[in-house]
Length: 396
Image (cartoon, rainbow, N blue to C red; front, side):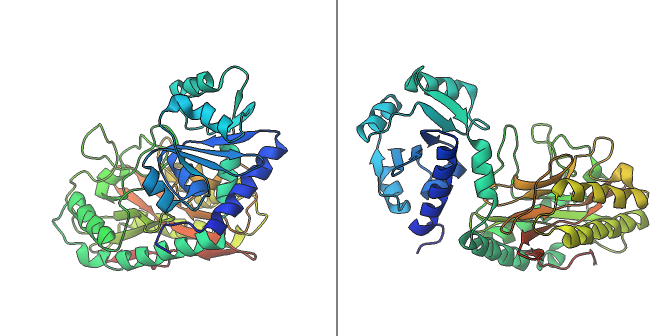
């Protein structure tokens, strides 16, 4: 089996789970149009549509490229669609004429939603099934876990090389470029997917010194200043000097299934305040490792992280300064921001097969940042750390 080609048995299980959810909500079917979901349920990312009926065989309708999709997807019904205008007639040809249709309304632009409503007509009600899909995708199968482990192993090999790439006088942008080169040589796919409007990220970021503590415009604790206001995150051509904190945060995407990892580096000695903050971040991480068992409430874990930061006298610096984010963990998989989340007020019970990243981080304006991030798999008895590079500061 070629890497990235999803086995038919895996797809069948995913489709059957979605069909049970559709039937339980009395929906006639689902029309999948978002790229990641297309891949998850069909094994291909065509210019086209995947129709999954509540009962019956799915239909992958491809505008471009039909030959490629037939090679990539093991689905039985992969057919050509010459025009979007013929979408409904083609479904009718196969016996499908949904009255209640599920779509991914969390990411579907209003203009496109209106177009689909026009195509299907007023007798069809389009309803949001994004929550159903997110929940289904949050619990990883053995197949998905195996691919995540491969990404974690490849990412470990790259992080092991980072100390040898850092030298005094280089810029954070240069260091980032050298790490990005190593990532690509190790097989990184070169992109990471976020779900949602105006969410974007390259492979990761290197943040050094005071510039690392620049206020973030994104829903993330650390972003950096970036090179221009158009893309206000990442390295900013800051020169790396001695006794300066360097945060390296990269997504590992080598199989489609990602891991997220952050480590701290320093030429010389890390400033005492940042060293203290890093130790507190490791304390938060240890708490999560102890608490994150099947059935654990993610909102309660988040509250315990706030308590640890407060006891250390670092509450105002935790997860951002001035306007902190309200989470310490997020699911990872085919996309960066999957379920579950460890966040304020979002009560999710952890399940075996959940994979999430924990990123306790601290921001000190005028000084820099400190923190750690690792990716974990929820097992039957607790969690397994998938990102195995040594925690703590790496002083060079």
